[in-house]
Image (cartoon, rainbow, N blue to C red; front, side, top):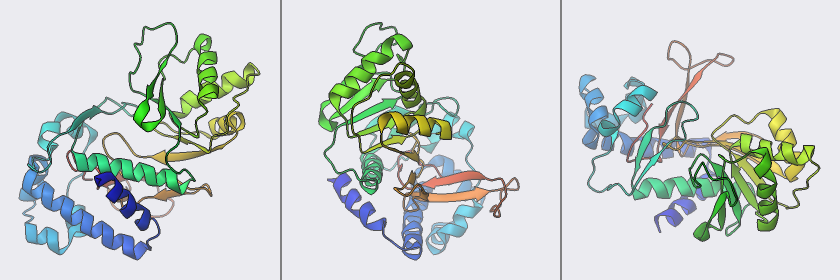
Length: 305
């Protein structure tokens, strides 16, 4: 129920003006900072050190956000127990780990609302690129779904409830790839998502060995790694469909998604994105910047700056 409610809300917000989205951000940020103030020791210490009060947060949450220190990856990893939201209305329902593609894997605690929000945002992305549920899909991710030492197929498991084939990225060797292609051809997914490197390995093998992938998917979405132009070209040629790039993260970053016109959209209702230069102030156009995020979708282990 929570997922469906959030999906309806997020689909409506996709058509909001920037001004309306700014109001959404302010409301979400206010709720996030108040909860952090009341229930999260790590952030509570920052508020106390800066002499920030609850009335300050309610009056101007954006100004308060700018005063807070940046959260480093090291702090996120080492002080995770202090970053967990202790709100009794948010019991932990799942503990996961990040893929580690940008460094060491990190533990991540989730409550039900965080899961509902994340899947609703993911489903909205599907809808914006022409996918309507239910549909069959294939996923390549960093999850260990098959024993890494296994030598014989199957190198996949079926997720019955999502009509989803979870395929192992750890067995993509030349001697196995034909089995993957055969299974994908047999399964006939409408959507595929996961590491661009996995799709590139399969596409390259199919091209070099004159093997046809004879399915007609609506889309492929890549995640977790950089999608390079040469990979996009080969994958789209072999799978005969468009690739959509998207960014989020297992620990709950806000979303950036590609649309049908090839543009990347910062999903401002999923969080706040800051682009800071080397002096940690708002970067000007043309300056090298780093992206700093504050997320509205993981409320159990929040990412604030």
